[in-house]
Image (cartoon, rainbow, N blue to C red; front, side):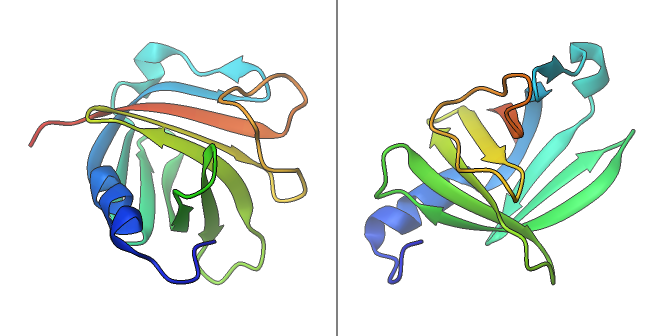
Amino acid sequence: MCPSPGEGWLAFKQAMQGTWKVVVAEKNGEKRDRDDLEKVRVVFDGDKMTIKDPRLGTEEMICRLDPSKKPKQIDLSSAGAKEVNRGIYSVDDNELKVCWADPDEKRPTEFSAKAKSGWTLLVLKRVKP
């Protein structure tokens, strides 16, 4: 990932900060029902990404960004874990897409989560404060 963050890196990191509502969640070709996602939130705070899911619980991960790559790259890891989920992301004002691979899979090259890909896709909308 970026060895020495510059202004561009900080801008992307700041653009992701805050609370996001999950509008699409798909893993290996299986989409979660929209009604099931209504209360799921993803919070970016500094280098942490926390998924708050009333049904599945809370998961906190450390994220590292590299906006210099095309597509932009994100690496996710649970605290204390050696495994890394390599992924890609795209962010604009109010929409964030994050797609990552299981630890033993290659980094995704597109925003999808086809059957047997080992990929997870989240499409998020910013929650207004």
